[in-house]
Amino acid sequence: SVGEALGSANLMDKWILAAANGLVRFMRAEMEAYRLYTVVPRLVELIDQLTNWYIRMNKDRFSGERGAGERRTSLCTLFEVLMMLCRMMAPLTPFFAEHVYQNLRRVVPDAPASVHFLMIPEVNEAAIDPQMEADVRLMLQVIEKGRTLRERHTLSTRTPLPEVTFVSADAVALRAVETLHEYIADELNVRRVQTAPLAEMGGRVVLKCMPNHKRLGDRFGKAYKGIQGKIRALDTDALAAFLREGSLTLEGETFDKEDILVQLQYSGDKSHDADGVAGGLVILNVSPDAAMLDEAMAREVCAKVQKMRKEAGLRKEDALEVAYSCPADSSLLARVLRDQSAYIAGRIGRTPIPGAARPRRARDGRAADAAGDVGGLVAEDAGEER
Image (cartoon, rainbow, N blue to C red; front, side, top):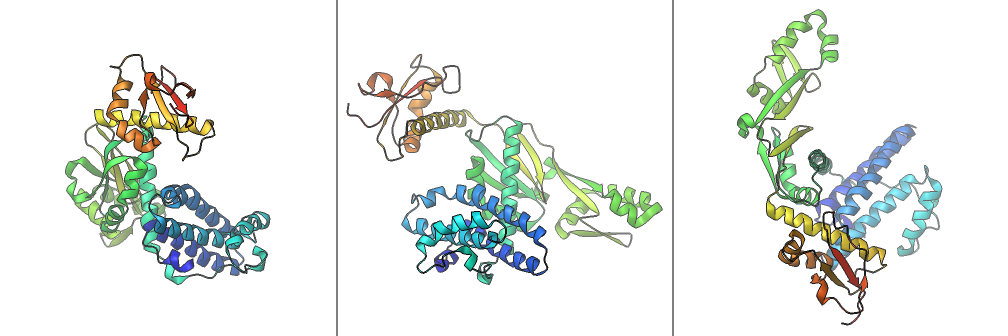
């Protein structure tokens, strides 16, 4: 399974294997120097990346929705990372690591009886990829910043938005977002993911520089006041070049990104909002159109049905009927259920039917709040014949 995991062309597989092997390399170096306190935060970080990002973003692959090959490859990758984590965590959390290992060893012929009979893993150099780790780290920052912008405008992730744009003077960062745009679009629920070099944004993005007072004050002493004025006088072209190159020379003195902090600020119209990430700016279009609002309501209906399915103890493959009733056929909910019927059917596996056509012996699910976002009655039938 190691070969299958390493042979995967999936970017998320490559990333999580690179992160795990990067941690193994770091852990070996630190523990040989008896710096155990530096290892634990990195272990916690990898667990967060595995559970909150990798596993969640690959559920459709694990379940086989993308085919048997993708399912096998993703599960092999997950197994390898979990086994590596068990072996790394064994000296730190011996009982938990043993519990997880006893489950994993069932699929390994002639596996040792205990994780404590195994050494810390060796680094697989073929899996090491610092650039992939950096690219995904930026992707996660873009996603988290996009979510923050949604919250700022009270826009649920169920509401589709037109686009998100990443602006940067760094060509490598722009290329990373372009490569991983499908994951960003899915996580932020946007129609498009765009990238734009800083030079092409014109007056919509302005640069603001802030000298690092403590660092430069210690460095220049009484001369700092004059240096500060010259730094603040830098024009947009000089700051953009500084962002690209990482340093600049001013009157014979060299300054790096620790000395001068540059922020990108959005100055466009109010249909967009923006916030900065390391080396760039995330601009989110926060003005959904009518079709997007309809889709948001359809997603809300799907979420309520899935919640009712779970409360009823039904499995995904169980047959059911979904019926609805509305105060009037001309209501917003009735129109959305008709217009978005194909989308809803694709999500819940059944086309909603009017309440009058529901099966005679159908069991009612919990009614949605008539004053809420959905405002109708949803009923389920656990497969009874009409």
